[in-house]
Image (cartoon, rainbow, N blue to C red):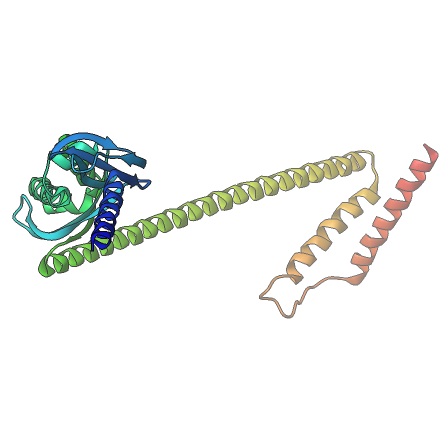
Length: 310
């Protein structure tokens, strides 16, 4: 009996020693920090690694995750400054930077942050009109981040980002906004169409103007060419008349025949080319025309002989 009792006592002591050792040795995983308490009073913060505690006297208080965490903010109804009802929810990213403050400065850290964020969302959105709320989401996020980060600083928390996830106006406001957007797009389409028509009319007018300018320049050039041709024709005619007059003065009958024959044939050409003439009846003698032509030939021959003698 005595031996059995001794074995039981030894076994109890061994179990108690094992429990004491288990209580005395603590391993803090990476990304966490634990607080150490002595009879319920904060002593220090234990970093990741192995730590030894005095059993019964010391124990682990709060176990905190020091990595960045995400916190979903529930949806809530918010009244804007122009009395429009809108549903808003958000998401917040935060990181504990002081384990002792997070453990002992606030009870239920996540619940406190959720309520703080929801309150500030109502405050920020309530100070803006509906159009401002829907078009200035970045400004809202920046204002929420500044306010919430300052409020949670005593809790040992660093808020890194606050993002509005969704802003949902009521159905009637959404429908009105859709109609307004459609009207605005139609207005822009009409403006663009009018601008296109205006530009097209301007280009057509410019084209017509340029065409008229080119046409006028063409007519001016043609008139200049016609005048130059007439001038040269008149000069040639004057020179021919001068030569014939000189020949007549010298008593050259052949020159007279040449001049008369030339004018005579030109007159016949003009009469024959008239569009309203089909049959021409002229009282002329063929021998006269043949004689005139023969005179022209003799004149040409005489001119050639004169040039050869020269």
